[in-house]
Image (cartoon, one colour):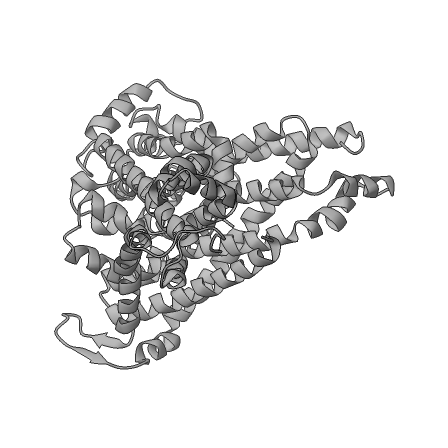
Length: 282
Length: 293
């Protein structure tokens, strides 16, 4: 505090509370909508205060899904999303760790060539090459599989860069000491590098889990089988079904469920999340 | 960037980079080169015959008023998203930087929308602004304003901008706050002793000092608005009404997957790729200046 001006401090708090309220208002409305029955949700004006149908809606959404739309509970979709997010996060971390290790610790032909090849992927978001990538996945018979959902998204330059940075800060003496003790490259990697990068791995995992969970366009393209739908892409189908018969209580319950895992990760692992976010941007 | 102490050549490093390189080649390099090649072809709608036409697809695009319209719309859209989201979070961050008690609590309550998928953000706002049922529509109606984004293109644009900016506030706030907290307190105190009030200190010290962060966030926000907002557009407006929210990424998808104009769609992809490459280069230039190894 530079100067003591209570008025300004109070004003700041009020403004911040207003900001929090604006940010949180949509979620409050969503929650309220998820606690009323379908009949109440078509009467104008819509409620601003929670009702008593929360568990009924949860039950219907989880097991049965929306009537007249995708005839399937969101439990399956939650599971698919979880598998996809985990595969993307774990896969990205695994292949990036290995390639960063090779590039930093080995001298071998085409080392820089490989590095630039990885670097280029930074410039090719899936949105700009959707059709040819779709064709590749179709030719490999990976449509409607977890592999098809995750593998095309797991090559990532950012993760490789982050691990490269981490490895470069690790003192050379550690490798010398390990060598004197007779450790080979893989032993050094598993016993020294991995434990030393633990926090970085955890921070990156948080970011990548959110990234994987929130994928939309890619699952939309390659899953034609209902049993492979993810929850994030299901929201679009539900909004379409809402054009005919609005069941906002079920739709809003689904959006609540769709944002629950990633939001929980941000709130409960805030430190790792902030670290991951600021480090991957370097 | 190679360690002074390192391992000599063997097969092992090739095996280590193999998974990443193979995935990159199969899912990045090959599709991209295919897109480049396809952008030079014209294929009839049934895929029976193709003709190599050099840059005709691009020429057609730049004479197509729909495409130029989408370009203009995307620019307006991304500037609106970036400015509204960054402006709001800049003010919030300045306030949170000032209050001592509770600034971390405010941070917790302001950063979680980062984890909300764009399409989910779109669903929340389309529900609140539903023309017949929406709670905000009701509020606006009470104030004498008829909201219907299904008929009014400007309102549809407003809806997708609000949904996109709402989600991005979290990210901008986090970076603005971190930048402000890293400014040495002695600078602010010196200015205060010289008699500069809070607003003046913000304008002459804080804002200039965080300008690298502001620039970085501008690039990130533009990239976000260009590419990541596909879900919002696709789920909420489908580019309508009357193409009033059709941004470039949505048009690539729509022309390619729905319209099956593969050559034209590929040419649009190539132009988008050039935009991404440009933005990435700008971003890296800035980072190289900031981070010293």
